[in-house]
Image (cartoon, rainbow, N blue to C red):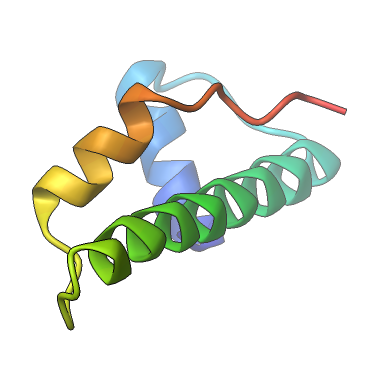
Length: 72
């Protein structure tokens, strides 16, 4: 996700809302970390199946057994 997509998402929720630049930076870093953790976990499951690709089921399984990344 980039700043433009994040701003579009915020505008879709509330057209009058504007995020502070520090908040944007935090949300973008959080999203990147979440996606990296998700892909890594799904990759482990795909490797366990001896598959060369991640299937939606790998992602679903990983999401079903993990907790959200804490807001530190």
